[in-house]
Length: 179
Image (cartoon, rainbow, N blue to C red):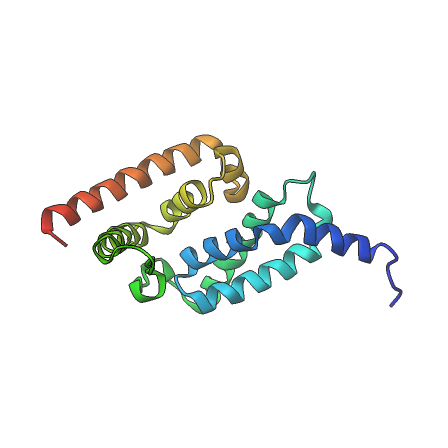
């Protein structure tokens, strides 16, 4: 095997373009896999795949390209390890969070609101959950989401509208039942 003289430059470019999106990759994988440990495994595998396929990146906007690889890697992992994973129960202890420096009453209210939103998001079918995560949590444009999902922009818009409506209904039901 011969050494590629361009490898150090390739690695530097990959690190510069892909590594800043590590948190976004993990966040997407966590919401799709619904488990922190599995998400870490998926992201590691996805970054290896991304590095191998780095020559296919066009331009310098690696975020949608990388998140598409994370998404595909996660779905492949889920198919192998958890058939029917879109029905996995959400573990609030894994995904809940609080601000220890805030007023305890506000912390409790924020934690309750976050838990309600997390439950509503976790209850969405995976196709709707992923568009919400990409748009609302990762702040991707419709065009970037379309790239990640490999679907037309119109599909992104309709899924996002439906996901928002389903989340609003879930939150309203939560209010009505006092949960």
